[in-house]
Image (cartoon, rainbow, N blue to C red; front, side, top):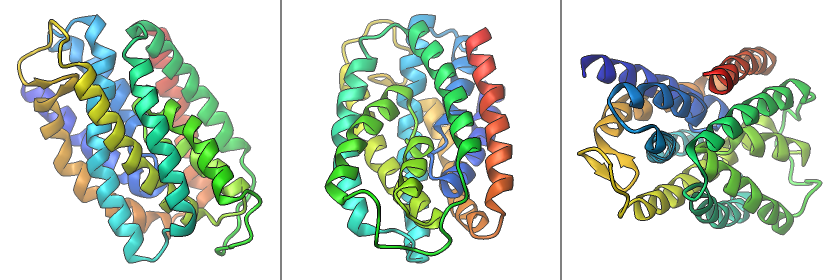
Length: 266
């Protein structure tokens, strides 16, 4: 149990930094790590992925709150677009969690691994982004909100915040990187809250859950993740404004490929 707590504390630190730096919530590292960790705690393989996804989303509620607060202090959140994006993300998040609860754990695991490869390719293929904020976006606010329903569904199904899809979309629309990450963090918080509630409700009558579960949420692991997740998100926001974007993209893309290989092979 000491090993589990130690892994979760470190995992929370990493998730917090990634939340502030990339607006992704940290689910890309939380989900595969929990998929490896939960079976070692005696949890049935059929329950591992739903519990990993649900617990990841609950952690993202915390990283998202801390990240949005830090972005708002720097006045980086583009609220005119964020309102539409959040509405679409909530609808998609509720739908995605219900779909994921009906899909087998192994299929979700393979789907997640493939998604990581796509995310790595998308980050490396992304061209240089605008450096200054712009109100003249290529896509209207209602259209961005509609597209974000699909992003929300995928995010909830994978237990991630959605920044890996949303940041490229917003930068393509002409938004500066700092604004895009801040908007993604705002949506990350929205989909995490919606998805967490949905996973908790859909797992209420599930049999075989370990002691300490609230639906598919595994509270002992969640409590170990939270401290680092909350306090490290502002550190990630500061890094976003200091570290060259190209270095961040390359390093994170390598991480995505390695985690994707692990998910598909193991």
